[in-house]
Length: 314
Image (cartoon, rainbow, N blue to C red; front, side, top):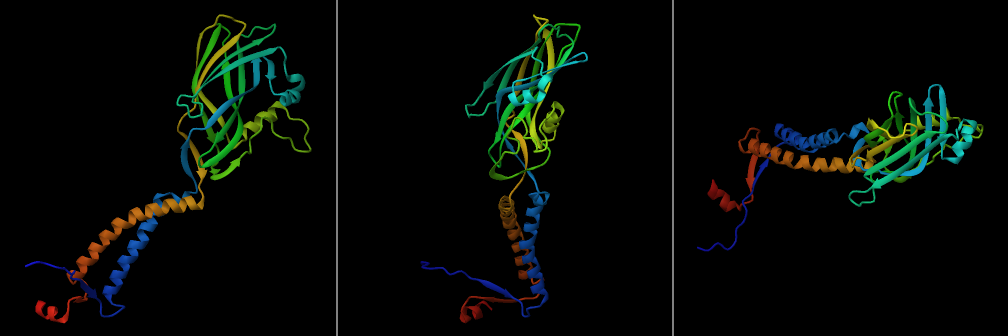
């Protein structure tokens, strides 16, 4: 005997009344298949939190400008390379304070983003001993992000240098540069340039900004840079020069807190929904088939066989 063609035998399970218990049971299970994966997808994806975190290595570079504030006893010394800030400081800017620094930039993987900075600094005060002196250095940098969040800004990087009076010390600093933020940033391809300035633009009714107001503007920013570092000491050759060798790394995985767009949220939720829907549908289908075949809920059975074959099966 040779089989030429095979037809699939199908069996149908029907309920006699539309509002029967069987109909309610089957309808409830199908609603379960649709609604439960949808609900779980929203919960798992943190849809209602309103913000997410992604990781990016920011592009950071040193502009070459600085603001230096030193204290020796009760005397304050200030120096800056920024012309407008120099005019704002006026007589406070001390020309006897000499500050030199050199920045070496390293790009380990040749991706156009600097991974490491080595900053060598020298500080001296003409006609004064610099022992027991504490200095705050603000290196002005440019920062940009380009993935989920687009930012172009200028940010001062603060480093504190301190030397004791008892010894001639050279400072060694090792740490990293962190991108910090107070509130989430909007996800957009439009470049955010709220802080793309070195010195803030003064309001029309204000024609002068002191150093305190300038530093307060830096502290009030939503996003900026911060250096986390460890400071150590070694013997210095020249007691009249405060030297520091600073090694700072830019983390490859910097967390960025942002507010995703509605489209991004729905896209992620849909992916979770599909992943949950398939196993849920398979499981519920087994439950429905088992309950109908075993007549747990009353139903009528029919098939697609011709009447003659149906009588033979009986």
